[in-house]
Length: 119
Image: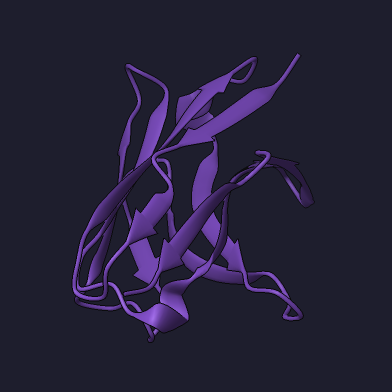
């Protein structure tokens, strides 16, 4: 059974930092592209950042220079370090694992963790 379990969300003041973690089980973690997505109320779920199995990263323009995604293929853990947080970063943050075999892809999602940036 595949499980992605996020943690680390919470309430933080503008300018503060949070560190999100996602622990995966039931998959060969190192074979998957891992990503963080977020969804604010009334909005679609959007990519925040993702990282390939070999460590290539990409970020949404809105978080470049503030957020850092990383992975530990030994501990099956994905991390998102979020600095200089803004109120517009408030959302539920989801971890996603994407597998690929030839032309077929599939996704697994975590349950999400709430991040609220407010004074």
